[in-house]
Length: 211
Image 1 (cartoon, rainbow, N blue to C red):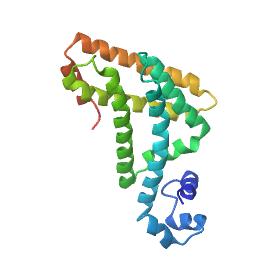
Image 2: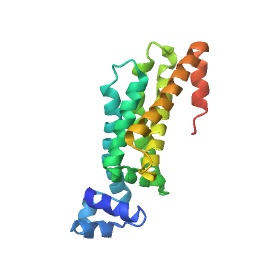
Image 3: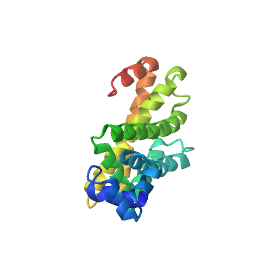
């Protein structure tokens, strides 16, 4: 049922896809659909859950596999290249997530924000291991979250770039460039923390985040 809905959402968009259309395409009655999902928003949310888990596994899995390396650039390159290779191989998975992010339905917007927060939390947990011993312990969690937010945003930009112009980029080239950009920011963050009060730095950075 989710596979059928996936194809229809890609073809028609969220608003252009009805539960009737999903039922017909799946070869079942509409009550069967509603036995599984109370609404179209819930069905789409379940679809986002499935696809986001795949995307997160590609990125965070690659980061975790190289997490023992002291070279942050190597870790980030591995993560971004792995994620973008997934975009190249299965672009539909990423388009459905971007479809949800662009939808104006409040229920879907809330669901997308929740999914993104989950991704940030997972990446922040990895970032915490990189920052331990380098950042004041009182602000370690706050700065880890900041790094997680930043890496997810950089990754989203890379996904959009590759989907928009796949003929201009390879996952290896774009992933390497994103990694260098992110690693440079990470190094600057550590230098700033060493040169100033880490607690004040964390407060300033987090205060500037969009609410």
